[in-house]
Amino acid sequence: MNESKGLKIATIGGGSSYTPELIEGFIKRFDELPIKELWLVDIEAGKEKLEIVGSLARRMVEKAGVPMEIHLTLDRRQALQNADFVTTQMRVGLLDARVKDERIPLELGLIGQETNGAGGLFKGLRTIPVLLEIAEEMQELCPDAWLINFTNPAGMVTEALLRYSSHKKVIGVCNVPFNMHLSISKMLGVEMKRVHIDFAGLNHMVFGIHVFVDDREVTNEVLEMLANPEIQLTMKNIAPLPWNRRFLKSLGVVPCPYHRYYYKTSTILEEELEAFKSGQTRAEIVKTLEEGLFELYKDDALAIKPPQLEQRGGAYYSDAACNVISSIYNDKKDIQVLNVKNNGALAEIDFESAVEVSCIVTKNGPIPMTMGKLPVQILGLIQQIKSFERMGAEAAVTGSYDKALLALTINPLIPSDDLAEAVLQKLLAAHEEHLPQFFTDNALLNNQG
Image 1 (cartoon, one colour):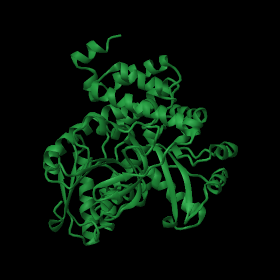
Image 2 (image 1 turned 90 degrees about the vertical axis):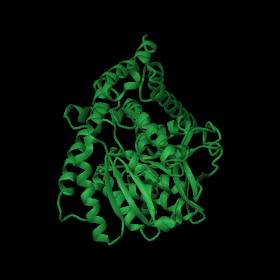
Image 3 (image 1 turned 180 degrees about the horizontal axis):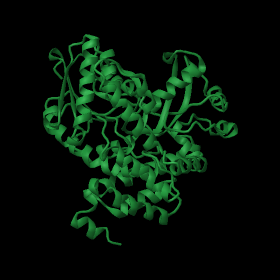
Image 4 (image 1 turned 90 degrees about the horizontal axis):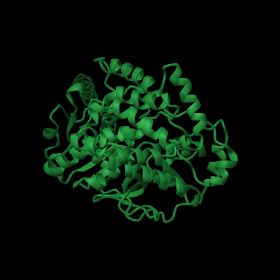
C-alpha cells in the first residue's frame, strides 16, 4: 500500500444502484482515506448503467472538491492491477434472476427471498464461482489487497472464499448490524458511540447477545422495547411484523430483522403469497425502484446521492463498507461487525468457517472477538444455517446436484425433501445460463439420479 501516491480501489459491480452510497462514503472520509483512483467495473450487460452511475460519481466528486479520479471499465484485470482494496457488489443474472429466485419458490408454496431459503441458495450458486475467479485474479494482480464483499448471500460467499480460494484476505460486510446498532441507539435515546452490542452468529442470522450503554447492560430493556408493536427494528425489504413479547423475553437476545423468516415463517409466507398473486414481489418492487433511481441518476444537475436510494434497502451500505476500509488503512482498532474466519470466536462453530461477529479492526485486518459458547436457545438454528451454507458453497464449487439438494433439505424454510427437489429442479432449469458448473458433461453424469 503506497500511502504517498494515494489509494487505488476497484469496485466490481460499479454500475450498481448502490454505488452513489459508496461514493458518498468515500467522499465523507477523504481526509482519512485518500483515494486517488476509484475504478468502477462492470460487464457488457451493465455498460449503460455503469456509464450513468459513473457520470453521477464524477459530478459528486467534483461538487465535493476532492481529487479522486473515477475510472470506468469493463476490463476487470485492469482495475485490479495494484489495487489496495477491492469491493464487490454484484448480481449475477441481474434483477431478472432475483425475480426467478423469489417467484419460483412461491409457485411451490415456499418462502421466496433473495438471501434465505431456495432463493438464497441459488443466488449463492450463481455468485460464488464469479467471486472465486475475482479472488484468484487478485492473488495474481493485487495479492496484498483486501477483498471487501457486500454481495449476498454474504455468509455463504465468505464461507466459499475462505475455503476454496488461495486469496485469504477476505471480509464480508453487511448493513444489518449497523442498522440494528443505529436503531437501538435511537430507541434508547443515546448516541451510537455510547451503545455497545456484542454481535454473534452468521450473516442474516446474527444476534445481539448483550447490549450495553456505557458500562451498564440494557439487553432486557431493549427486548421490552422491541415487544412494543409501535417500535420496529426491521429493514426496507422485510415486513415489520411485531414480535411476541413473551417469546422475546424468553429468547433473551436481540434477533435481527431476518429472523422473522425463521420465527414467523407462516405469516411471512402468507404475506409473500399475497404479493406474488398481485405480481408485486419484492423483486418487482425493486425493479421499479431501480428504474426510477437510474432516471434520477441521468439528471446532469444531480450531484449528490438522492435520498430515494434509501428505499432500495441498502441504507448505510457505505458506513459498513467504507468503515472497514478506513479502519484497516488507519489501524483504528475500533469494533465492527464483519463476516470473517471464526478462528475460535464462536466455540461451537468450525474454526475455518465464516461467522458474523464483533471484530477489532487493525492494519492487519479484523480480529474476531471471542464470544465463547452461544446461548443454547439460538445455537441449534445457527448451526443448521451454517450446515446449509457449507453444503451450498460446496455445491457451487463442484456443481453437485446432490449437495444442492442436501443444502435445501437442511434449510429450515424448506419443509420436505420432495419440495427441496422440486424447487431445485425448477430453479436449475430457470438459471441454466448462469450455472454452467451443473451442466458440464461430467456434472450431468454425476448428477443423474
